[in-house]
Length: 143
Image 1 (cartoon, rainbow, N blue to C red):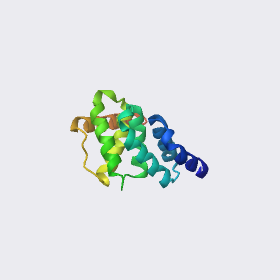
Image 2 (image 1 turned 90 degrees about the vertical axis):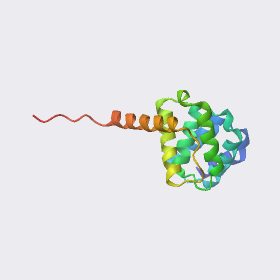
Image 3 (image 1 turned 60 degrees about the horizontal axis):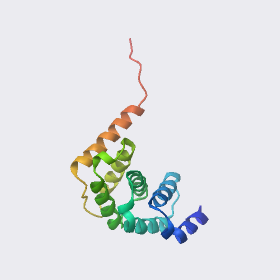
Image 4 (image 1 turned 45 degrees about the vertical axis):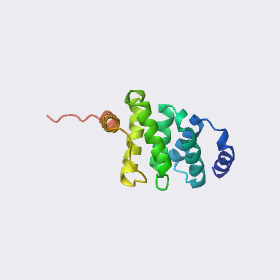
């Protein structure tokens, strides 16, 4: 994975927003530490955040929630501003769950102020609660 991280860093400027988000998501999902790659993804994402779709934003936000947002205040502000710009209706339930993870991470270790409207944060929290309830196994009632 070191070779993939190095190659990705060298080509990062040619990545589309989906490529940036998917690369961050993949490394975070696998738990592979690649701080230089994440720094490069953060810088490039900040630069092109206006082209991120709701899915791109959800994937990138979740990945950075997993690896941490400390020292990435500009990225946090960019993600927050883009989420607010897109608005609540643009995000699916899964994307709201991803953003909820991001908001929790930022609130726990804030590099910058959250600028996301309360309604969007609340909807993300509700989507996460719904997803968690849906994944709980049903318990049989005792007679």
